[in-house]
Amino acid sequence: PATVYMTIVNHFTRRTLLQDGGRNNGWVKRRNRQREKSLMTRIRILLRKVAPGSYWDGKSAESLLSVCFLSSVGKSMSGRWEVGEVFIHSKVLVVDDKIAVIGSANVNDRSFVGNSDSEIGVILTDGDNPNPENVGCVKDFRLRLWRQYLGLSLDGQDDDAISNPASDEAYDRWYSTASSNQSIISSAFDHFPGNSIACYSDYLKLKNRYNNKRPEERAASLENPERLEKVQGILTEYPQGFLADDKKRTFAHMILEEFPLRATL
Image (cartoon, rainbow, N blue to C red; front, side, top):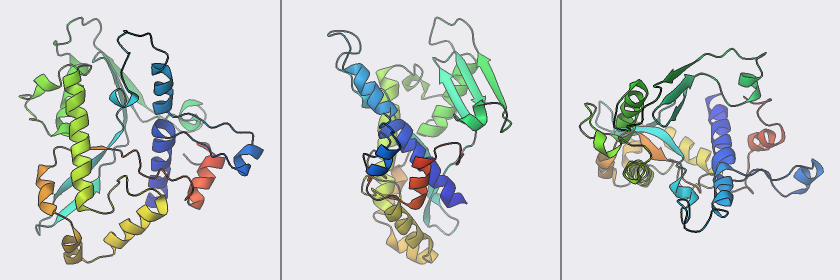
């Protein structure tokens, strides 16, 4: 069940945010289904229409959207390096450090129609706060999350770099940390999500091969494990090439594509 669930999570992360959905094969054509555009593609299309010399002129979609996941790296009591996925069921949306939505609902019909799953959520607001340097409850909530994600001092000593989430400095810190962590971890663990793992069958094969090894064999299989000391926090970039090969799909992916959301989540 856990493997199937993570297949679904990876599928919709890619299809919703990074890679246009649907395939131009006979099956999809018979269903009269158009190729759905990912959020990254929609941003690229909008940026092509901006006025020359405007604030958005020259910006890339990658500089506006960062897709990440959370991973924990550390040494076991026996001194061996291990990596694990940090899965948090709660969903959080923070807007301009003024509004935060925290709840259990997924963005699908089962959560939103109202006659299926029971959900709970809370909305926090700080009202009018024209000075971005002021710290209300919403901003304090975001800062505490980002300190943990980015491996910053938990007492707030490093908050200057992330105080304004819309600043280039904050985005650069977020992106560089996520990118660096992904590069370091994937260089040590060959089953960790990376651009070289283009299809789910390869990912599952590498993951099972690692999990089936004895602890001492796992330790011996790591490449340059000393680099893992440089991992900061738990934020990791979702590689754009990870599971990107449309030609190699599992049966689960075909089911997800033909019967989206309602039959799966």
